[in-house]
Length: 247
Ligand code: ADP
Ligand code: MG
Image (tube, rainbow, N blue to C red; front, side):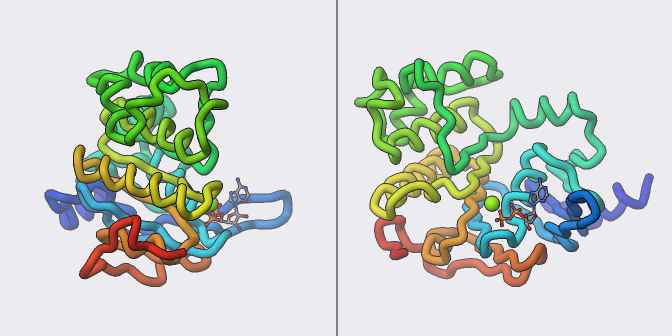
């Protein structure tokens, strides 16, 4: 047994989805090195709604991209269940992203020529055990917008289509990078409600990045990132509903 798998087993807990161990990420920009992550250790738990909070440039997107198999660390290990993502081949990472991870980004990236239903169907057609597009859109409150094109939808509605698209393949984890970043606070609340509803209805392990401390109050757990290091982790004793948040 290698020392890596040994340490893995020592820390293995039933409800741990991600085990992040001493992860660093250095970007080489010509002569300059940017140390985006400087030794991150964290476990993420099954079904939890986690908010990853930190100032711009603190390394949030870098960490999320590593969790989602979009990027690999310079050093350290990321276990998804028993699987070490840092040792996975390109092909295994593609399979991992396709079947296990849903992504939501700040900009919705919907296909303009397809309706809401068709934008979701693009993903469900290649998934293993997908939801029906209609079912996913209902979960985010868009059952009356199935045949609307993106240009006929508000920003918040477009983001909810993007959430429906991400969850329709029934991913184990939902990774959201500043999902309310382009939205006013009222619209942002509706999007956060959709994310909370998905988390509660499907039990999808959810990570939401924000630089907005107000949003952290709806989380089960908050991970605070400062200059590429975790500076604070805490559980909210009482969670606020999205409509109770102020920002
Ligand atoms: P956040 O999402 O918290 O704003 P990021 O993870 O995007 O932070 O970035 C962390 C640091 O890494 C920043 O200093 C950023 O400029 C740098 N960085 C991020 N991505 C790259 C990249 N692809 N190439 C070079 N530097 C990068
Ligand atoms: Mg970012």
